[in-house]
Image 1 (cartoon, helix red, strand yellow):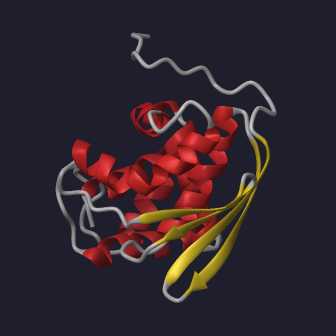
Image 2: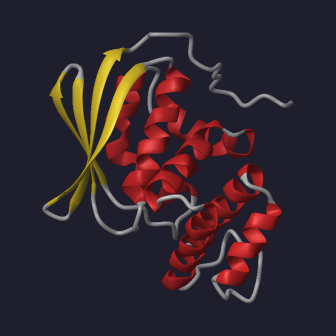
Length: 195
């Protein structure tokens, strides 16, 4: 698995649960090291072992842990670059949803060797959507539920999400958009500003 994904997990755990939790998990997983390098590619089993160790240590289901990771990826100041990449998908939440079909290609423009599973948005009505998460990265659909929730907050949209599980090998997330401008969203400028 790409080191950027492993580094994001590490950053989330350290920021949310503390470095001691991360060190316990890397030791329990038998990694032999505690820091992932963002631009390296790691054996697939390492990530699974670390996630299993983290969920056991925290006594949390993996799907909930991964959903919280997705929320972190959008909402934490450490991850502002990813939030900016996602916000370039559109001015409204609906435009953002329609941009998800191209997300894996946009990510590959930024990091050429990072392959994310394909996403496919189906508009069932102007307020009902399904996002199909194709196979390729275990737990990706759970992370996407967290991303979609956090992005709804970011845009100020009122959305109900449910992870509908597997349909013919594709994970499906259902979305009901109740109000696209429910509250004021987080400030976003196309040009990055120095802090």
